[in-house]
Length: 199
Ligand SMILES: [Zn+2]
Image (cartoon, rainbow, N blue to C red; front, side):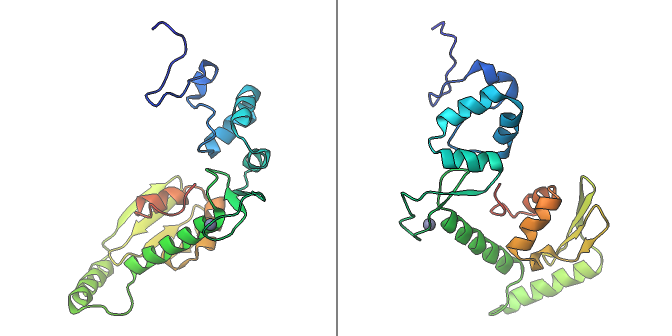
């Protein structure tokens, strides 16, 4: 009792120097917020650097790269040498998971083969509602998103450009769009794309 060092339930120390950031230097999950603080606060940068074991990982983190190379230890599952900067997990497996999630997500929106009579009627009903203009729309900092009954996700970008259905885009195209229009990430989360894309 009476010690100035606060502990979290799981026993990690809180460094009071960084209380104002409301973020502690933690190496287990490196994220954009920690990178921002590193750029603003050299003490935070030093503290975090000392907790990140790998200089390659830390350099990649500061540079904003999603991966770094771990030559000493390739992935047991896929053999990739790339690791995610975020949490040191395998980058190759991560990409594969992302692609699978994307395929599953698209499959949920637009099933092709083997559609039953009931789901066929359901689709007709959804199309009818869509034609009648029924949709949910929401603004995201200048971007307008519309979710349509058929699963179509329409985007009207801040510059006026319109995408009829972002489901038709490849993961790469979507990531590229997010790099230009960051609020698109919030749109995807709003539309239930919880697995994609990760930060
Ligand atoms: Zn792997």
